[in-house]
Length: 314
Ligand code: 6CS
Ligand code: FE
Image (tube, rainbow, N blue to C red; front, top):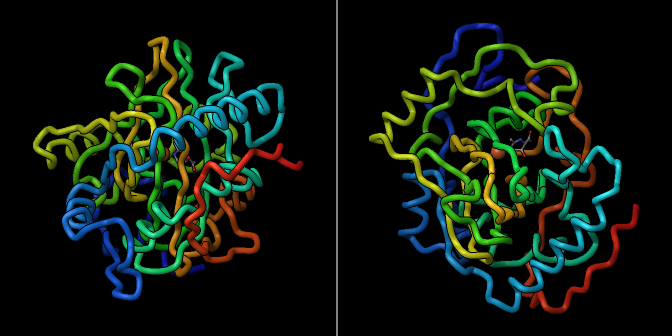
């Protein structure tokens, strides 16, 4: 097994250690893309970057109809990659949306987001995980504070911090409908979490994550380091949030009538493919952590209007 640079959940007390990997992996071969120098510097400093309206109104209206279609298609589907909200039959998340052989598959390869990921990761990229988090009105429950990397390292064997999540806002994200909250600068620290990973943890963690979450003292310390700041990723549909794999984030429940639906494409560097989980347990299923037939994405310029959705094959 590879050297474990970021031990966590090993039954010891919580510990905060410095990040050992670069945030922006600068590489002149992958400098061509939508991010300017000040964007890369801001991402380096905060651990995230919000672009208002990276997609135009025509593309947004297609996103909304594809979102509805995806929801309708999965409403009655009883499959591992469809996660319901705790205590209700409302859909919380649908995974592996980048393999829907239609609109979202094309969107995942669009150069506006792929080239940005290449600029940040300094290499070619592929998608290690994708999902739509629906966070329905009234019933959308919270996602407690966590670092995605802490889970992906422990449970999926992601070796280094060289992945970036691209969250495209599909329904307007307001202050009051459970927007993503992020702690600026938190990506510079790795919180080694207390506890141990239960067997097949994903069967419960995708509904409510209780392992691999920071203890209160560590969380308070991170917010103190940010001078008390907690940012919210609010913006109109079509806006895009890039956030670093180790940035501490979470979101509150949604009791408003307005759904807060975002699609997440997690771009991993082609140099950072998943290995054996550092928890020592079995690998999580393919829909959560892609391992099969990994190819670097060839970014496309396609106008998204060309893609009509074909119902997912399986
Ligand atoms: O376990 C995971 O991979 C998922 N869990 C959360 C709360 N965020 C990242 C990812 O979708
Ligand atoms: Fe997350």
